[in-house]
Image (cartoon, rainbow, N blue to C red; front, side, top):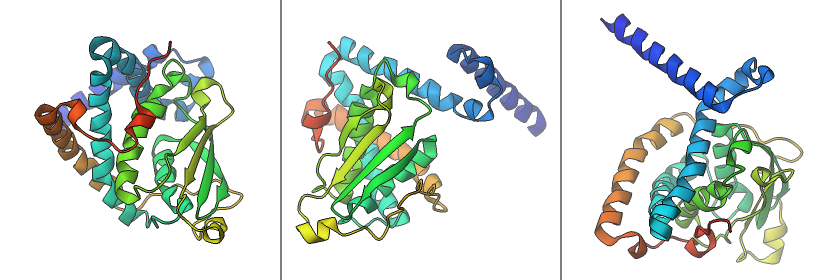
Length: 253
C-alpha cells in the first residue's frame, strides 16, 4: 500500500517536472545540466511571481500588491529571531547583518562576493543568479517583493539599518546585483573597522546551521495566517511596514 502511494507521488513529481521543463524551453546543454534541473522549481516560482505582481496591480491597484507584500513582510518579521540566533548575527555590524543575504543566497543558488566588509558598511556583488533571466520582465520582484521580506526581517533585527540599496540588478542586464548595507549611527572609527565575520577575497561559505531551515518552514503557516488576519481586520492601508515608501510598487511605464 505504502509502495503504491510512493510510486504515485514519484510519478506525479516526474510529470510536474516534465511540464515545468517544457514551460522553460531549455537548450540542449541545459537539459544535460543537473544544476539546471535542480533550479527548475525556483525558476517556475520566479516566473509566477513576475506575472503575479503586474496582474495584482492591474486588478486591485496598490492595495493588491501591498497585500502580497505584507504577507512577505510578516514572514520576515517572524523569521528574524531565528535568523539572528542561528546565524549568530551582531545587529551593530553591517557585515554580520549581511549573513542574512548569505543564507538566502545559499538557499537559492546565488553566488556573490563581499567587496566591502566593515562594521558600518558592507557591499555584496551577487554575480550569478539562477532566476535573473526569469525576472527580466519584472525585476520589481526583487526590489519590491523580496525587499518587503527584508524590511520585515531587519525591522526586528535592527530597525536603524539604513534602507538597503540595490543599485544594480542582473535581471536588468547589469553585470551583478549590488547590495549595500549601512549603519549610519556608528561613529566613524568604529564604522571603518573590519568586521570579525568578514570573508575577504572569497565567496562566503554557504550557511547551513543545523535545524534552522525546518524551524523556518514551521513558521510559514503561522506567518501567513497572521498576515491574513491583519489584512482582514485592518485592510492593507491600515498595516504599517518598515521602509514601505522605499519599496512601494510602481509598475513600469
